[in-house]
Length: 145
Image 1: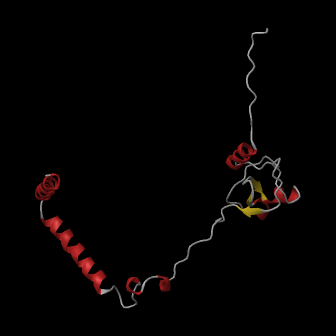
Image 2: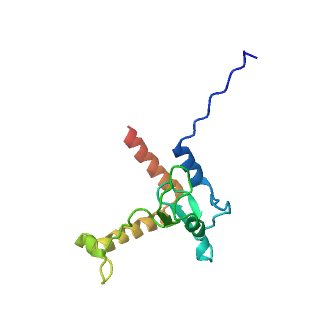
Image 3: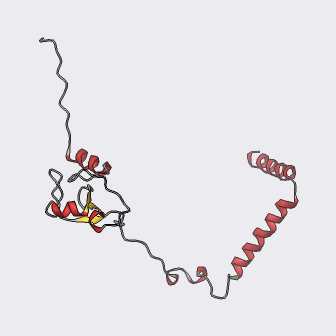
């Protein structure tokens, strides 16, 4: 059958393999499910620091302390769930002086804003829906007009 057309070869890159391993919830060594909440330290989930493949800690160590993925073989892991980037910490001293919380209670400007909000809320409750709707409609016409 000379007229048969051959299908093109499928190209699988190392990135494809790494992505598939990151999506898998099974350890590539034992093929068992890797779970987040475990009581045994040996079954604690770890990730290859290079490709992100998920392992049981004991399986990583039994493999010789390196990734089992072809082409990776990285020797460092990180615990699953630990943040990669540093955590931003803001201290009160980092804020401008006028925005720091006061140990004596809210600042005068905060008290003024809270009072304005309280009055506006009370006004909304006292006025009816149609009155508020009418005001909104008139403002909308003025803006477009």
